[in-house]
Amino acid sequence: MRRGREAAMGLREDLKRRALELSQKAMESLMADEKRAMQLASAVGKIQKGKQALERGQDEILRTLNVAGRGDFKALGKRFSGLKRRLRELDEKLASLSPD
Image (cartoon, rainbow, N blue to C red; front, side, top):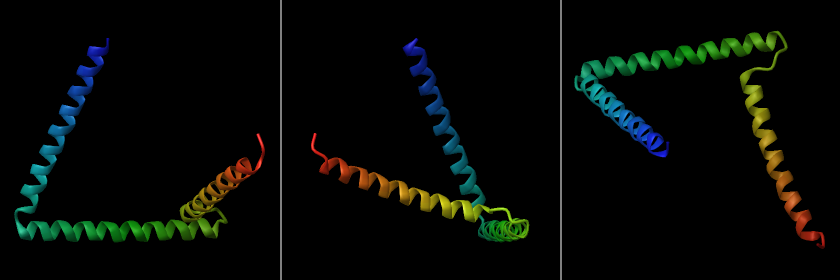
């Protein structure tokens, strides 16, 4: 059973490696032509700007509806992580002070 798993993992890794090599070759051929590379970069830039505009619009709609947006949840997550870290620090300090 173990050999079967190892063989499957080896096959999976081999497939991943081959897929990566193939994608690298595809990108190299895409980028070989400078004009095509510039067009691709321009298209990616337009997509990123469109995504940002869409996210701003979503946040505005959510604020209008009094619903927390993605940025709000992200900020709360960061604050919560900081509070958890501080709680661990205080717990360690308390444990070091208590006689056992």
